[in-house]
Length: 150
Image (cartoon, rainbow, N blue to C red; front, side, top):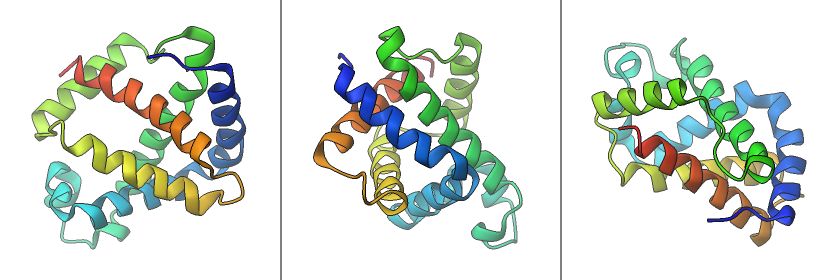
């Protein structure tokens, strides 16, 4: 899998628009995941063990923002590095958490779709087939790196 200069430029440009609102967009991203796959809520102990509605859960926004930023920042580094540059220890921690929580391979396309919907809504003026392809490649590379550590 390669990441072209054009893909890198598209991702960097769109991420510069998205990252300033990462807390809100991260929450929207996760709420979209839960709309597409309601059972995914059971993968998050802080949600399944809570009596608070998911959108009001105090742990959702910080977690969602961290995931959203991880995806965005790792995507912007693909062109320069030619690979996912997330620290090995972080990948191991994410992989272990995913394995312990019961995340399966089929969950990643749901997250990818929710991520795309979030970007489309946040920056409709930037959305194109080329941008979708660029973010898709970035998302897939990060997902592969995470899966390699589960």
